[in-house]
Length: 129
Image (cartoon, rainbow, N blue to C red):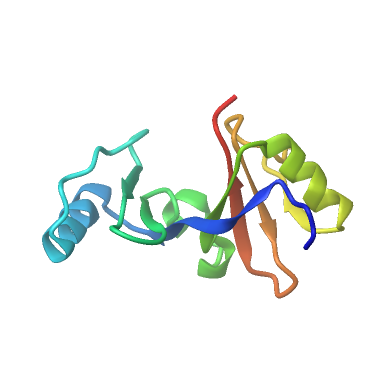
């Protein structure tokens, strides 16, 4: 099997929302989960009992990222890594389309987005540096 710095697990599935507090409360009520903290004013992580968690993101709306951005331009899910730099180098060495924002691939010191062979946007996220 190919050695890769990217873990073979989905860490979170992104759900774009227009109102983070309303969405957090809805998922809490429907799934019977404790209220999660809203992070950076636009994120709420909802851990599930098994499998990937849900990541509500208020910034993933056309009002925030621009009307020209289509729903398919949001990451569908997040893969985990212990080394974001090595993961980025690994993906680039394989010719994977890495998405840059402001001329940089790695954002906030711990994640980057890329497209799979079908054009779907995905994300790799590691510990903050």
